[in-house]
Amino acid sequence: MVAPVTHAGPAAAYPEYLDCLAEADEYAATDVALALLESGVPAERVLLDLVAPAQVEVGERWARNQWSVAEEHAATHISERVVAAVVAYADPRPTRERIVVACMDGEWHALPPRLVAEVLRLRGWQVTFLGASVPAAHLVSYLHRHDAHAVALACALPMRLPYAHRMIEACRRSDVPVVVGGRGFGVDGRWAGRLGVNWAPDAPAAAELVADERALRRMLTAELPHLADDEYASLVRRRGELIDSGLADLYERAPRTRDYSPTQLDSTVSDLGYIVDFLAAAVYVDDGSLFTDFIDWLLVILTSRGVPPAALGLTVDHYGQQLRDFPRAAGYLGAAAARVPGGLDARRR
Ligand code: B12
Image (cartoon, rainbow, N blue to C red; front, side, top):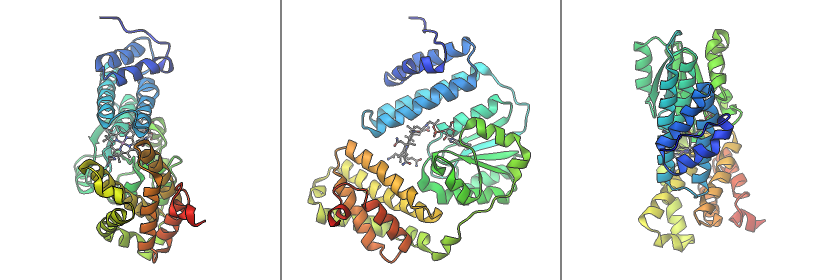
């Protein structure tokens, strides 16, 4: 067996580590990380400067259709093993109180909060990591049974924000301070501000926040007066009907969709649902950029999978027709239609 190369630091080791993920070689990936630790790189830096950026690249490769879902899953599994090996090597012992780290209900991106959990552990906190998709009621009952200094909640997808809000409120009623993080709150955490909750951009910031009792316990209030217009609740009620009519509309206006394989049909139905869910989340936080950012992202994904952007234009237009009595949702759909190349809106202009 070839001895692992010792790199000067995580940045120098990164290309080799990514190759290990691409080859699905978990032993070599672990060796790269352990060699860094042995050369004196702190465990926290290995997690945040090697494992985290590699996972972001994994996502880019999946989004560009360079990697299949299987390749992404294999790489993520290896990253999880590497995180465990790095923390076992460092062997931190708790000297501080308990922090509970969990994913929002319906949120399966457990690795980002796992990195946060391990950084907190490395800094002496006693961490309980509850993992993916924790239902609010179960989290609250856990908090009742175990004293916690704070709870850290993760959300990677903005479409889960309405659930996030319910969960944050449930934790607050248990009088446990809440810190949130993850891409779902926006790059600058702006949607956390809307929900009135402390947000940390990354693991070190989360560690500083939980150590600062005053900042942790400061009272923030949600800014959601717009929910009085009932658009969000109506959209949620009409979700199934919108997906069904969106599919019927595609069959009629893009007849090629009738010949879709079961897998293609599944993805189309999922996408029709995601469009409604992201729209509903945008309405919830009253920010159209949440929806237009999603449309930009979906265009990249669909294009990389050979789906013409005009197909997305048809659905955006159809939902716009169906929701014309919902001023905020219709406005966001109008702004989205303008971004779809060759879409109906572009042709009307
Ligand atoms: C691995 C992965 C998965 C795995 C997750 C497995 C696991 N055990 O985590 C699986 C396969 C389950 C998955 C599923 C999906 N995924 Co995914 N996934 C990823 C991927 C490739 C890596 C995630 C990761 O580990 N990132 C690395 C971390 C370190 O980065 P980070 O999130 O920025 O985290 C830092 C900060 O944000 C912050 N932070 C993060 N969490 C928290 C929490 C707290 C409390 C705090 C304080 C801070 C904090 O600190 C971190 C470290 O500094 C990302 C790509 C990416 N760019 O992240 C996509 C990505 C997040 N997924 C995406 C999508 C679309 C999905 C699916 C909808 C795909 C599908 N069609 O099924 C589903 C949704 C599942 C669900 N309901 O949750 C998109 C989201 C796009 C968008 N517009 O929102 C991304 C960005 C991929 C892409 N490039 O398009 N995914």
